[in-house]
Image (cartoon, rainbow, N blue to C red):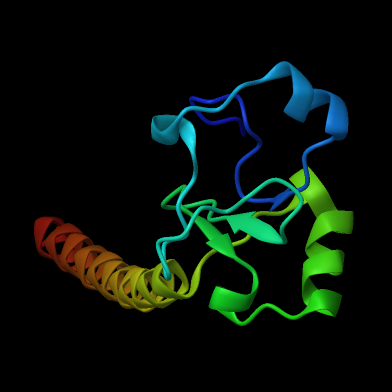
Length: 123
C-alpha cells in the first residue's frame, strides 16, 4: 500500500541516496515520530504504522535491530502496527469474536424457532 506521499506504508524506511538528492523535502513533508515528535530522517531506522500511517523511530517503539531487519526483509508482504494501534486492533479482535459467537447463537435460536413453527403447521 502506498500513502499520499508515494511512500510504502506499513514497512521500514530506508531511502536511497539518489532519492534524497532528487527530492527536496519541506518542513510540511517531513515525517514526525508519533512518540518523540522529532523528524524520522532518511537513513534512520523508521517504521510507518500500517493502520494510522504515522512514522516512528524504531527505538521509540522499542523495536530492536533484529526485529527491524526482519521487518525490512518481509517488506510489503506484511504490515507493521505501532503499539497504540496494536492495542486497539486487539480490542477489535476480541469484540469481533464475541459478535461472531453471539451471531452463531442467534442463528441456532432462529433455526429452533423455524423448526417449532414448521412442527406446529403440521398439526
